[in-house]
Image (cartoon, rainbow over all chains, first blue to last red; front, side, top):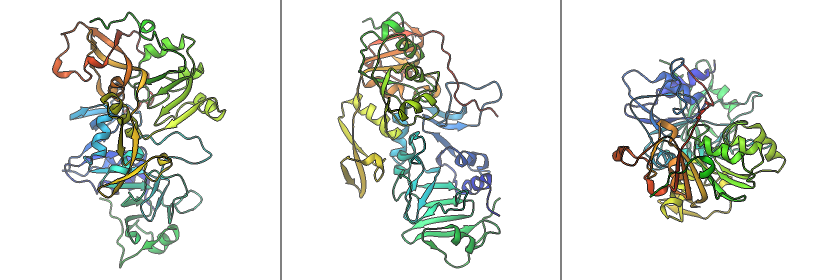
Length: 219
Length: 229
């Protein structure tokens, strides 16, 4: 069984460490906030200018001056703080954010990522994605392993316009957890019931399998 | 020292067609609603707007797009706007997309007298086309130039007659860096008080950057994505 979006988020949440400052992108990455392990305190950064982002407000409590980078109304947790956009990206570019989680259309076996533009479709812009991937020390990509028609999204080379080059080190897909090294996609864990063969078939880029590959454990 | 003007109409005096404007805000959060509305009531056209986003169809900078007052947008993200898409596809509108952090830093640099700087964002992507690349500590960086504008238009929560500004929550966003980078910076605020009434230890934007300030009216503060738990 491949992982659901929630389960991908749940697996990524296992990578969080106490004291981490974390930037979560839009989509599956946002869900990671729902699975922060007990006893671990992390501070969420939203690049429009906030550390200490909390959950969505209670009904009727939404504040138009308090939004996240996805323009959704949110709240601030105790100890949280607001700042301007230049300061926000200074802390990103300066390497002060411990972990960035974001989505992708494609990732290559050398760590390139394409996530912002599909030629022929309306171009909306890269937002902060290029800044985040170029600067973060530790990036996890949350993505589907293949497209709806079965095409691999883990490629030798990205076909879509790039967001960044040689920057992705780890992927959690619906099929597997993989690390990117000089050898290519190293298979670390597989989704429950998904075989190494299944993952090989779904991976166009170089896939490295070393010994027995354990199943992903979810809580 | 009198920076206080009566209203948005007075504040935008001197803006001419073809000029470059910086407009603060992130999405619809912290946008200068009064000045945008005042510009829609003029015949200004062929404006270049530097703004992180382009509003939505019937609010924010989307209002200027509807009136075809904008010739070029310099932004990081321009979704959520059908009229924008139509004008872009028809070739009526020019768009330059810039990574968000680079955009913020280019404004900051413009205000700080730093003509150019290197950043890693965009290396190896189409954003790098034509830009100087230089390695620092084994990592390639792109040379990016500072941005300034004929007018910067920002919105704050509170301001005083000297132009000192305080923003509310995440509504500071691009307002602060842009306030520093306008040859003439206009601030509209929800509450304007006499100098001395704001806590000087809590000012976000010192008044030196602000040339004109006024208290806005009828803030709608439209929410783009209402999410509740």
